[in-house]
Length: 389
Image (cartoon, rainbow, N blue to C red; front, top):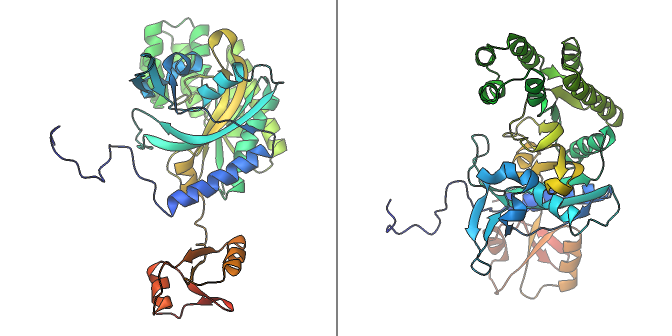
C-alpha cells in the first residue's frame, strides 16, 4: 500500500478497533459496577484530560512512559503535548496541584481510555479502557494492603473468580546490585536476563560477582505460592536493605490474608516488567481465561519528583477483565407498536427490559420484532413472547 492508495473506510491502524455491541455495552456496564464499588470505599472520581502538555505528563513517574506516549504539537500554544498512555501520572499531578490542600490520605478513582505508541505481545491493542484507584499521601503496609484487597474484591464484585495476585519487588534487583557495587554495564546486562528468568544468562552477566549471581538464581527459583516462596527467600543471605524489603513484602502478605482469607497469593520477587516507576511492592492480578494480566498496582511516588507524595494504587485492564468474567444473560427486548401504551413501556424499562419503538405500522409485528432482535411484542396485556420459528 502506498500513501496515495484509497483506504477502505473500515480500515483502522494496527492496535486500534471499533467497540461494537454487545461487548462495548458490556464493558460500559462493568466499568459502572467497578466505579460504584470503589467509590463505596471512599474513592472519589476524577476526570483528567485525554491530552496535556508533555512537561506535566512526562515528569516524575511519567518519565518511564516516554516511549509509550504519542506526542503532538499544540497548534494554539505551540507547545508539545502528550496523549496519556496511563492514568496514574495524571492522578498524581491532580493530587499534588489542584487537590494539594485536601486532607490526606487522598482516595481518587478514574475510568477512561488510554492510547499507547505500541502494544505488547499479550496486549496488542494500543487503545483500551483503564479503571483504577489511587491512595495518595499514605505510607506503610496498611495502604498497600488496602489497594491489593480492594483490587481483588472489585474484580470479584463484577464476576471474576479464582484470581491470583502475584506480588513482587521491582526495585530489588537495583538494591542487590548496589549492595554488591555492580557497574552500570553489568546491571544493564542483568536486567533482561532476570526478566526472562534466564539462569545461564544471569550467571554469565554476574561472572565477576558470583555471589550476586548465585543469589539472583536462588531468587528466580524461589517463585510460587507466597508462603513457600517467602520461606525460601528468608533462608538466603540477603543484604540488610534487601532483607528489609522482603520483610515488608511478608508483612503485606500477612495483612492481605487477614483481610481476605482464601485469596490466592504468589511471589515473584524479581519481576519488574511494567513496574518501571514503582518504588516498593508491586502486584499483578491474573485469572483463568484472561489474556494477560487483569490489573497491576503497587507503591510509587505521586507527582513531580520535587514534591512527590507516597502513594499506592492499581489499574484494571478492561479488555482482560471482560475475558475473565462470565457472559451475562441477554437483556430481554420487546417491540412496542407505533400506538403502544407509553406508561406500560416505561414500566418495562424500569424493570430492566429494552423497549424498541416501532416507527411505522406493520402488518406483521412478530416478523418486525424478529428482524430487530426482539423476543416479544408489547400488547394490551404486556409483552407477548414470539412463537418459536
